[in-house]
Image 1 (cartoon, chains in turn purple, blue):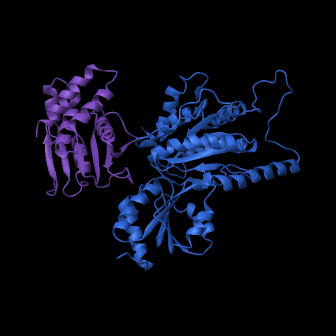
Image 2: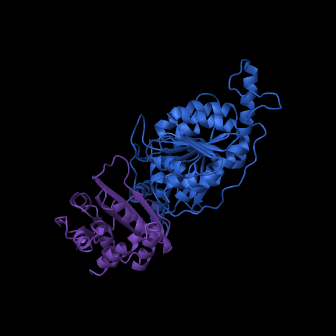
Image 3: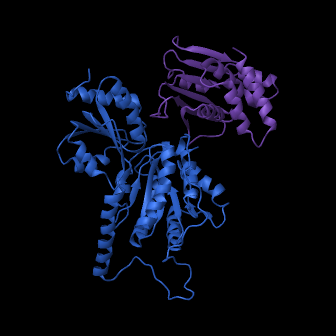
Length: 176
Length: 353
């Protein structure tokens, strides 16, 4: 089973970190995985995206022309990627800052007020982890506990950040 | 790990002591990795040169001094390095040159392409010489082949090119390093490290007597024959009963593999042949394939370059089709599956019940 996900948003929202987090979690669960960031002529404050492919067998291409899941952290990402999602796929929207206008009826839309929840946790930067928590609950791609293990490793040298990111993950997970 | 970082780590573990680079997308993470990690090691140095031309000439110098050395760039930068590569070949010096290639011609695009096949496999610079060319198709293989590149360069005293592309360099995959960094490598007996206590040695690429140069060319070509015999490598995938064999290298091969898995599920007997060494090219093995397969499809991310080598191998015994996407467009497995399926029915090949 091959599952491809695109994470997209503003540069600085942590969309590449979300992809990395998921890739490392999938890797430690023994899956085949590829991670491909958008690269090149990107600007600060512009849009960023990355593609994660997870599979039980060898992955042919790390590129996703029709992803199973899309996580849109801002409006431009929603506009750009909503038409690419496979029929029956899931679309996650950061509804705090994004107007959830979706023109398709054949996909499931999941609105997550990620930025608002992160604000409430007094850590606006962890909106990405709130979204990640919701993503892991709805997709069952990787376990929440694996994601938390990965976090511990990511913030090995900045231990004080582990707790707040864990809180954000769990808050997102408990939404559904 | 990023493909680019995996090359850097593998090079350090292979005992690369000197790296010289000049920034260009999409290989910058490799230069960055070496800046952070190589310069920390005792006896190693990292230099960001002022241009690609000086980087390759620094490699030339380091190789003369007898250390394992490497440079990396992407297509337009590799063009600039060709003069230096020709000089390395003439002086029979080992070196590893990484090309994380991108779309061309000219400054081209920054997206992955395979349009440097001709340049890599035909020598690239002026003069009658060859370089070994390794074409990885995964991040794991980037690491493994980087290690092999250093060994081959030393064994045959030849520049070795690693031909990757923007997608391999930029993507992240799990990777396992099978070697630890050596504590010390033996120094070549002809290394130039000061002539104290011995007569001075001169290494040069200019010979005024044509017969001397002819002898150098003969000796190079005897070695090239040996490399062709000993070092040709390839991967075969489900070719035993294949009616149609797709020939592809590097990243195109892994895309083709995905398409072939699905074609097999539909009952089409398709296999894949992937050269891992582009020079020496596995002519013999492809020639053997023509005895069992009916049709060949060459698939490349260019307008058809490797197909010329496939034609040389097949010698007209089988019909060959081509599918390519140039300019840095990355085709999808489903697109390649459509091409395979259409071709399969057009040629009336046998379908498994």
